[in-house]
Length: 427
Image (tube, rainbow, N blue to C red; front, side):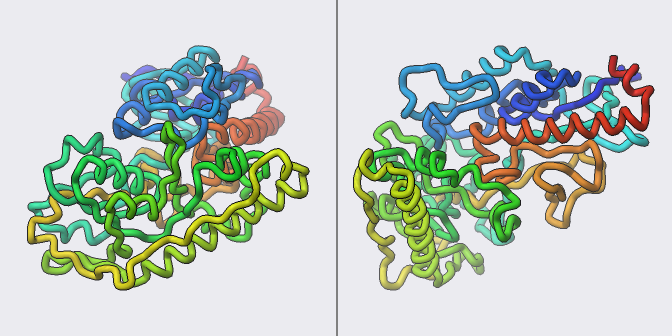
């Protein structure tokens, strides 16, 4: 019989979100464990390509009670450095991590929860789901129609250009992952075609400071989920076209076409071996350019109203995205020019082990700022725009964990008032 244990809170996920919650739970003297299917920072270790670096500057790696301690605050961490940072954080806060413990079920048991793992079963009053948003790649329906001779990969499988055959590569998706991978592969000598859908264009440096500095200082990243008109839309906005290159260069569609990447519209279908692309490329790019101008206007207004204009470079605007007059609408995948397709088409969380009826029709948890209202005592952390625009960043999980741990503590207090026996059990 599998060993059983009881405690107050189980945190599922040993990345930055789960560890930030552990720090706050410990601060509130709430007994808990952190369950991790692999090792601490498992996703960073096993599901990232070799050259990837953080998109945020080193100074922005701020976790509760811990921050950057090096001499290059404006640099960008490589993956090994990021892994080391998170591992050191887990050690510094003495997080009660149970590594190599895979959760197989979370279910309600009366007023409690039962968390079943391949090691033991835990009974607890509250559960925090901190497993992240990027567990499973999202592939479009057209992926099944791609000729079998073409190798296909997702960003979780891609490591570097050397694993690819010589020949052309079609990268589908132009958010952060897609543009970085397209840039790297094109520079390796393989011709890249980039299928472009909705995207968010930003410069790496604006008016002499990192764009993340501006977004942090002006409060853009702190915007709350209950302050936006359409939170569902906000949570599905593509990731910024941004990279943490040592030379601090921007990456956008113009920089890609400059090195030879060919742009086409959104991949709409594959029929008889021919890829079909949307004719909306020009409009999609114009919309991204317009949103960029709005962001820069917001930054300029904040700088002017807060007396920063004299401390930084003057306002600037960037060239519109260059799109050829008539981008190709068809690409024959049977002629051998395209050897590989990389699906940079997004991710979704995996809750196949969650046996609590809180998922919507798309497999996402229904919640109010991380509080799963339909299942009292169940919390969500580390998802895009969970409570703030920065929620999915290393720099954002700490504030969200603070808020949710406060709600969790209040919930436990209310339970104790109605069930005095729980106080003795926790002691």
